[in-house]
Each structure stands twice: as C-alpha cells, then as structure tokens.
Image 1 (tube, rainbow, N blue to C red):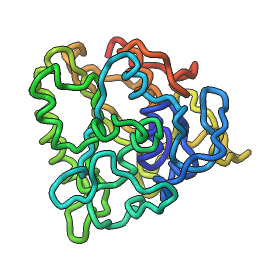
Image 2: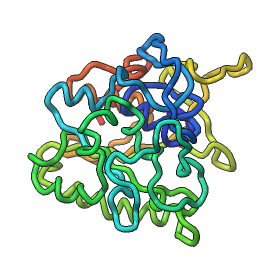
Image 3: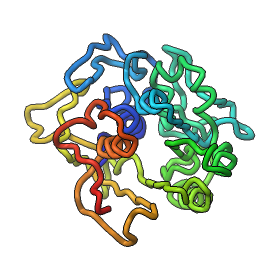
Length: 295
C-alpha cells in the first residue's frame, strides 16, 4: 500500500522513512522549510512545510557514507524545451506552479523529484551531479562501473499516467506511461550492470483518492503520522491505497507472486537491507517488513 495520497509524500517516505506533512501530502504548493522541525520518535521531523532540515537522514546520505553511489534520473530535467536544470526546485518560500494537477507550462514537476526536498542534498554539490535528467541514464548504463549503486528513475508529468495532460492538447493517461516503460525498461534489462546482479523495481505512487477506484487503505502497522490531523472516528490510519510492485532480477524465481502487504517504508527497508544499512525513520517500525527472501 502507498503511505499517503499524492506523489511527493511517497517519494519522501522511500528516500528517508519520514511520514507526510500536510504540505508534502499536497505536493508542496509552496516550497517552505519544515518548522519548527522538532524531532519526534522514530526520527520523525515534526512541523509544517515541505523541505527537511540538513540534519534529516536520507538513503542517499547513507549510501554516500558507505562510499556507494546514487543518482536520480528525473525526466524533464535538461531536455529540449525544458527550463529545469539539474537539482531544479523553486526558491525558498516561493510558490511552486508545477504542484497543481492542471496543465502546466512544462512537463517537469518538482514534486516528482523528492531529492530536492532535503537540504542535505540541495546544499551539496551532489545535487547538481546526481539529480539529473533521464537522458543521462543510457550512458551511465553502458558499464557497470558508471552505473550507480542505487538509481531512482521517474517519468515527467507527460508520462506519469495522470489523466490530466501535462500541456494543453498533449496525450494523457496510461498510453504515454506505457510508452515510457517500454522505452526505459529494456535499456535497464539489457545493461551490463543489471546482468551483474541488478534488481529492477517498478511501482507507482498511490491509488486514486476518489471515484470508482478510490482507495485510502494502509498496511504494515502504519502509525498516525504526527504531522497530519487525526480524528477519533478514524479506526485506522489513512494511507494511499493498494498499489502493485513488479520486481525483476535473476535472483528471483520467475512468476512468483506475493499477497503479503508492503508499503514504501517496506521498500526502503528492503533497499537498506541489501546494502546493509541501518533503517531510517518508519522503515524501522516493528510492523514494517522487508520483501520476502522467497520473492
């Protein structure tokens, strides 16, 4: 299950184990620091806002400390017609016009790039070097040595499956999303790095929040997040609903399926276990299990 509705909250959960704030659950309409940024149990940063202080631990920071590499390949950065460059984000305190789910001036959306919501990343030279456009992926995959230990690949708003077009008149929905997958996945699966022990995980952010397929379920011992309002009438924490994940690796038995519930914190925990890293934030909760070895 997804941790929350909207893309940013789930991206932040995957990179840091942090639960959503009201603002990250709304894709951060104004790019503001989280305040008062107090520390709560499970390493949670509490307050209102979207941008986490430099002291907040992240998966990229963990990898760097272990002399491992990471890179975010964010479609829409540095491409023809795009005004977004590496590590693109609004100025502190500024409104983000790309946060609204309406036709925007371009395909890039800041909320699809969770790396830029951590000051430890935006304040480092690594942001410009490793928060880059999708066009970098093919060249990096040319050799195992140039392929990062951890890669995060995300489509822009033109290919994310959203029914709202990224620009007026552009195609929308699952057709462009399928085209994105059919282009990127073969590049990964035929790369030398993948054949030397790679794992590809394909998943989505969240289920629809309303309509015929609306789903706000949660799983895995998800707590009531301290930055979200609670209601005494709510029997269980609201999440982002049921989503699927496809794992591809030579170390997995083909055709294996699992009905065991997992969430974005589970995926973070699984990645940390693969690299023998400590568990960040809610990835360390007792109810959060990593992916099963049998998968």
